[in-house]
Every structure is written in C-alpha cells, then in structure tokens.
Length: 304
Image (cartoon, rainbow, N blue to C red; front, top):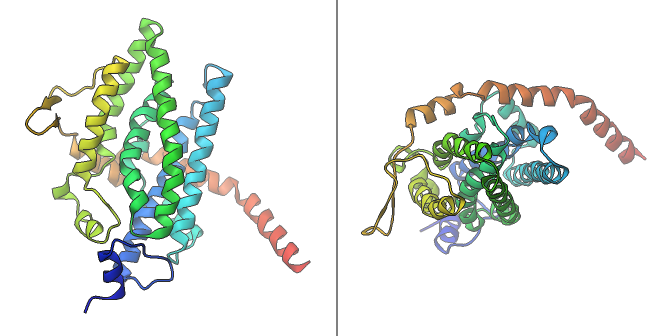
C-alpha cells in the first residue's frame, strides 16, 4: 500500500512541514532551497558593485531597490528551509565554508555598467524560467515563497531590459558595450539551468517527487525561445552560430555551453568564486556586533 506521502504526491497536492516525508525528500529540499537562498544572497554582490557608480539618481535608486529585493528573497527562502528542521545559522555556515553551492552565474564579474542591464534581462530572465514552475512545487512553504519572488523577479527582468534598450538608443560606444556584455553573459546564463538532463543525477527523483516540474533541458529550451525575439527587438546578436529556428520542432536549435567551464566554476575555480565567498565571510565577521546586540536586546526584552 502506498504511504500517505506517496498518495499526496500522486494527487498533486502539497506536502506541509508537519507531514511525514522521506528523509531523502527532506534532504533534497534542504539542498535545493538552500542553494536558491545562497544564490540570492551572493547575487547581491555583482550588481552591488555598481550602486555607487550608477550614472543617475534614478538608476541608483532602481539598483538599490533590486539588491534589497534579492536580500528579501534570501530571507524568504531561508525561512522556508527552516521549516524542514535546519537552522539559518547552519545554512549560512555551510555557505561560508563552501559546503553548499550557489548559482554558477554569480561567479562571473560585472565589468561594465551594461552588465547591470544584461543581468536583469538574461540572468533574471533565466531565473524566471526556472522559478515560475516552482510556484507549483510539491513542498508548500517553498511554493508559497516563490509566488512573491517571481513577481519581483519579473520587475527585475523588465528593469534590465529597459536599461539595455535605453543604452541601445545611445551612442555607438554604448551599443558596443551592450553587445560585449551580452557576449559574455549568454553562455553562463544557459548554464544556470544546470547540466544536460543525461548528466543531472537529481532531476529524475526531483521530478517524481514534484519538487521540480520541468527538466533542465526543457527549461533551457524555453529560455532560448523566449529570448531570441527579445534580442531581435533590442538589436543585439546572441553569440551562437548554431542558433536557428527549427520548423519541424517548432523551437530553436542552439549550441551547447562549455560544460567543462561549468563544472570548473561549480568546483570553485571560476573567475570570482574566491572573491564572492571571501566577501561573504568578511560581511559575516563584521556583522557580529549587530547579531550580539540583537540577541542581548531580545534577551533583555524577554526578561522584562
């Protein structure tokens, strides 16, 4: 006889924190939600690099709001992970020591201001493709957190595209800056969906449990098909000589990213891996007095 958990999954209903669940299901969720939360927190760094150098007050305010949103997303997701019996301190410690991963895309540098727009358009666009199906994930707290996150990510994607459109209407140098930025971020954006399905050890089980609703390759295809007409409207060229419409499939054929580069970044050998974690560790150490003061205040308030 099927367990209550299996019956709930079969009915396409939600698993809630107090429900019985297999240890492997719990562990998979902790890994995925933690990686997602870490990505939001580490993802503040590349764009935060440009806050003080934004070209206008409006652009500075927009970027500040976006980085603040990412911090909030991290907190929503850490809260969802805590419902599975793991503490936020544990998760943060595993991030700082490199025992848990975050999205490979954030290990690439933001070299020009155009990267702010490209991250909004391509990186947040890829995140939306990844995350909208997670609103229907089988674990209740995760799915509910994703609803608000996806709404805010949609704003981020539109903001990035609007910035690039403005730059493409500017000088030749600005247009060249946008194209160069797109050339650098296109392949890492495709890597955001994870390795090909044949090389993804967790996909089949996550699909069976309803944690994931689409495979890596399905989501990557959706992103390419969505992005091609946007690139045409923007006036940029996607740096893939194999990118062509396939009438028979009703979708675009496209080249493969450098998967060796992907695995090197995942293993910690990307352009900015060491820098990102060093910054996170430094922020944690410098914030010790805030945590101590908050704990002291909470203890005094409880005593009073």
